[in-house]
Amino acid sequence: MSCLPQEFFKVVCADKRTGIFMTLIFALVLSLMGLSVYLVVRPIECIEQKRYIYVNKMYETRQALCQKRINCREIPIVRFPQAVAIVEKGTNLHVCSGVIISDQWILTAARCAAFCNSNECSNYRIRAESSYSNRDGKLFNVTKILIHPLFNESTLEHDLALIQTDRNNNVGGISFSNSIPISAELYGWTPFSKADVPYRDNILKIMDFNIIPNDLCNIYLKGEYANIKLRSNMICATLNFQEGGCYIDSGSPLVSDNRLIGIAMFGKLCYSCPSNMAVFTNIHRYEQFIQDSLIRF
Image (cartoon, rainbow, N blue to C red; front, side):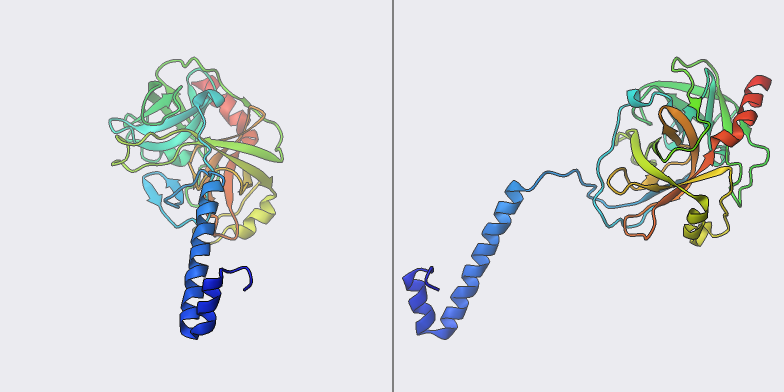
């Protein structure tokens, strides 16, 4: 009490009720001053204010609350020029992602071709050489869709498809990896609603993953994925909590040292969930199928 002004000390001692009131006022003032100092000196963070999770299952967008701040990880297309966006013709609505593997061929998930209205998939186009899925770059028409003949929609086995475009791209295809690394990067876009497409830039993003054993991953497959058992033609990975965002874009390429590791199938990502994982098609297991398909067509 000796450090307080004498007038304040006299008031506290003379009237107990007034003293308590004045003490509370004094404490409130100190608290507000402390908060002001914190707001001024705290480090600036990049925060996703609408804390949502986005899971791309074609036209179905699921939203759930996400309970932690998300670091911004937007990147330009020059960081990974082989990334392409599969968009709806006319609306530029983002459907899936894919990756360039040769002059005229794109690799993506089989489910991404589920809504094609013909073998030529005339309702979709491929946007390449752009950081945005809804503008800029080059647009290619789809001339052929090759879905893996053993693709199983229930178990998601062999979730792989090849898309041929109507002309050559100038990017060059990505090489395949013949081994599974400890960590890898996933490139893709966030699915938007049709109302958002004309007004919001959909920028390419990156997430960092750590590869984990499939046996461990099987423990996490619950709910709608309970009937799926991971096999050797699949890869499981967990999200690095310090990086990335809250979504998984089907067909997105999983890459390590500029080599293709996998193609995104599905994921269950939320910072409030006990586990954050994603499952990918293991491209190394399908190299022969891919090479044979390119030779035939």
